[in-house]
Length: 71
Image (tube, rainbow, N blue to C red; front, side, top):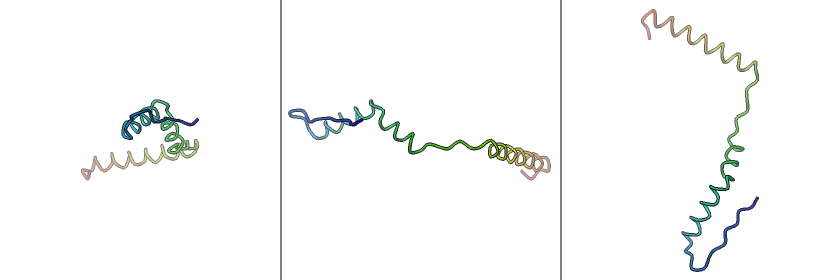
């Protein structure tokens, strides 16, 4: 999936670069590459449950401190 842009007659280098970047954005190649590079793995069910329990414990502790006037 190569993107090719040839220099037209009497075209400046800046115009060529501008045209190339526009074609690159329209093609969606950059979006796909970023999606692959920064893809986050999904957590296992057990890890999700542990995280939810941890959040609940922190919430309870926060509420307890709030009632005591320390937060």
